[in-house]
Amino acid sequence: MYLALALGLLAGFLFAAAASLQQHAARGTATATNTGDELAGRSMLRPLFALLRRLVRHPLWLTGWCVNLLGFLVQAAALHVGSVALVQPLLVTQLVFAMPLSTAWARRWPTFLEWLGVLVISGGVATFVLVREVAPVGGEPHRNRVVLAAVIAAALVGLLVTASAGRTPLVHATLVSVAAGLCFAISAVLMKMTADDLLHRGVPATAVDWPGYGLAVSTFTGLLLEQSAFATGSLSAAVAAMTITNPLASYLLGILAFRVQAPTSPGALAALAGSGALLIAGVAALSRSPTVRRPDVVPESGRESEPRIATPRKREHRTEPSSTPDRR
View 1 (cartoon, rainbow, N blue to C red):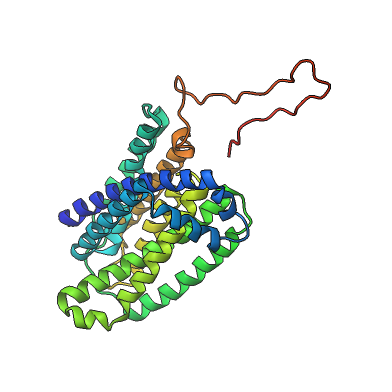
View 2: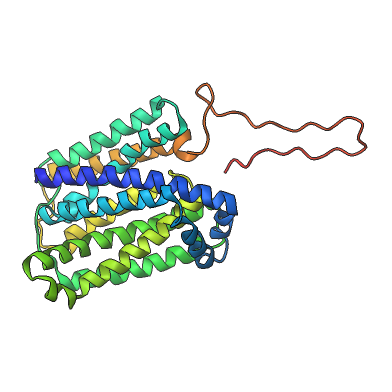
């Protein structure tokens, strides 16, 4: 259990670092080409693939991709030695790691609210890990239940992506991020099944079994949706939504699709509810951070600079309308 805990926390840090690097690269590319507005519009796939073609030539994005790949390898190792219901909820710590990374990009110290969010999330993770029976250990998958869960998740992802078309950037990023979180939750289940196949049945048996191919599809779809969210929203809309959706869906899958003992005692259920409440409250606190909401803004003297309003020019018969920066 302790090895799975350490590997899960390391995976959370690597995913946070990758998200920070890729978010900055994707946001800068979308801003320079107006791709972000196109992604939030009615047609999403064509501008998204155009964005990806530019991103693969961006050194910062490629660095984030390599860090993300390393995170997946560490996550696979954690899932092999631990259960999905134990490892995946630990990934909520990526938002804790993302906070100092975001403030480092903005070149400022974290605020009191940001530190409070970090402490609350840390308390939720500690409660989840330390209270007995809350986090199930081990378990074998029910293959029929996994297939059913994958079909339901695919339908939900399709509905969320369809509903995101034509929405505001914030709503679009949130819906797409939830869809990406569902993809990554299914990927975690299939990753554990694929790793077990490789170690216990060998490469030939794994090559003719379906979990490996399902893992490739779900992971690629999640990464594609993740880039769309990064290009059109802030960390609060992208990382926060995925950070909550992925562990929550994974915990439910770990209980329902695996042969594990679900928590039944009043103490374990109370600890589970308290841990979930702390995690949600911590994420909500960090989502209100000015740096998390707008990582491209560098605050001056601890606060964002106010927009400068244009004044009418003298000796002109017409006055130009004043303009302010887009505050989305």
